[in-house]
Image (cartoon, rainbow, N blue to C red):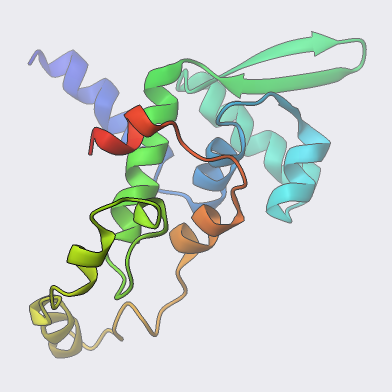
Length: 158
């Protein structure tokens, strides 16, 4: 991989390192929204949301459409949507319960009977950090807040 391409990938991950930006991107999956609607959905002031959206736009993760005085945002492409979905779904796997995106999966009963490894929790306690169950779970909250389900093809791919 050329270094320029790796640097661009790092910038994308940098944009995903902020909870508000991940939540904004999540809200934009499969829909276009104005700044005020996005602000209401993530519970942040519109000026703050606008600043986050400007960064996401510069990183080419979102694009805009102006209609009179309102600016509408949508994801740049399906790759961004897939990246956000995969990030949130991967975060769901860190919990103790069956991930929400697997609830309707025919193989869930088999997954529920398999005990989870506790080694990750032990290393967290040694480092002085609390277990994931005790920490806020924004990714899980985001996933549960979504009313739009991912397509079956998306779920089957991970």
